Length: 332
Image: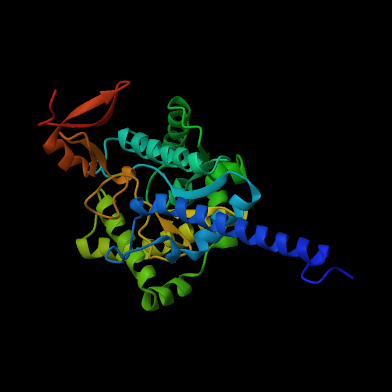
């Protein structure tokens, strides 16, 4: 029998283990909150008036903690970088340009900063979704291939080692694109009826639906009918874009179930995806593939419609291709 006032060895060991586990858990939670705090300044918010803090993102905190506890690099997935808009009033061409380069460099830098406080590091998987709905947005598959290949070459050329790419070719190889799309749609897409119900009852789905209609309408070039006919056509196609986008998201989640899911669309606090802003833009929906980059006199960059950027700056070429605009008032 142990002396009075002493704790049995087994009980003491259990107590130490419990204290150690609790301390470790708190350390993991603090680190996860610090990492999420690094994302917050770049949040693309559907609720910009809300003062979001790390504790408002319990799902992402739990996902980060899983990687931290395992001592593994944190993996983020980001659907996006599909292809350039087919509307020349919005973009410089069908290949990635300075807008993409700056956005990729930003994402790489974010991973590098995370690596300073989480030594295993972080990486972002760019899940290029152009092929999944290329036929719905009237962009040829060869243009999407060229965009995706140049994006991968840009990552390699710039030494952005924290970034990888993933697209339909990664999953379904060399099958014809129409067959790839059909397979993914059949296996993962929600029905149009489901989406119609969600548009009527869910604010976020309604906001997404309206945003996609706007993009489809803006990107339509040479439509032969009336404006009202174009609107009807774009409303119909918007459901197909959302179907394909949801299907792509489900496929990514199946392929990378532990990853922290990022989104280029505005998201509310606490959603399953964390909305992330790539570059400054007046419109929360603007992306490098729907715009051109303008270099401001103060050294900052902004994404604008190509025709607007052209009014404010002079065109700069890189490697014989249009790259971006330099403000007319840029100091030298």
